Image 1 (spheres, rainbow, N blue to C red):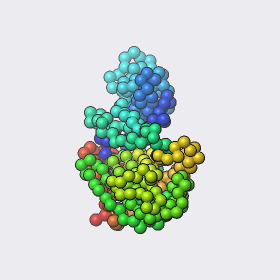
Image 2: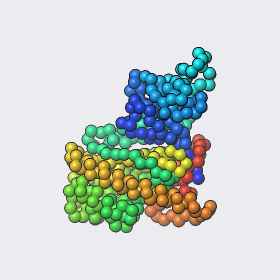
Image 3: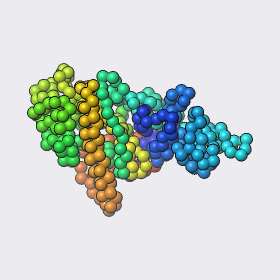
Image 4: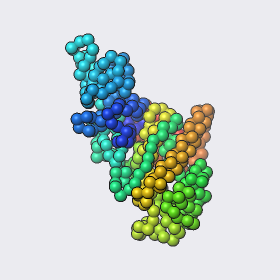
Length: 355
């Protein structure tokens, strides 16, 4: 168990999810109500509990840009300040709820749960392709009943594709090809690369690109702790994809994006996106990639739910085994532990590195 890294930005929603209806999400064990200001169009984030009897504000309603509690009518402005209480003119000095810094960027709504004085909008990591008209993107979100660290582990080690996602995105070469790992501890970034020069083309790419036969396939992971995960994927017929500094304009490019947001102890939000730079106006390809990738995501969801249940029954002090393919995941764990140590918070299960 380590602490949540509280003084960090986390994805709370897609921008398209936040409108004039109150949206509730629990981030780092804190229930938050989101809505879009009628006056400015910006996203507002307030603690989702009325100060009076702790009734969820998301069970209330909006009156212009004010939130009206659905239990006794306490009313709050966009700063969380109570501006009306029933039956009296004097508003108690302590009648306010927390408001949280918000940044809307690259299709995501980011929220800062920690010390608001430390919230730097310029520190939000970028996923520019999500808002770039040169890319077509599909996506979704799935809640997982497993620890936040288990999803980080899952995404940092893609060798599981061969076994868990065989017939979808996994082929034998994914598990057989060694990886290289680079760690920038100070920036909180881990990069894991796997370059396959002669690989089977999985259905995910065969059906979306039309490629037949063997392919060159590159997977370059870029994890920005604690929340943003980017997988730069490139494929081409064997012999077409050049070296790292060469022209790869003849390759098919897919950007796989995950936002990994702790909800409560043992629960995590899995935001996922698939962006492509080919067949951009082909609705059939768009539908296929959405539905196919959601199936892959749900395979991960089911596996992590099962894994969490298994870990919950393990005796205290059980010995975990790690191997070469876990290098990136172990580096991510170290960074997450460091970030958490910089600001104490509620506990979140991140499996301890093997000794």
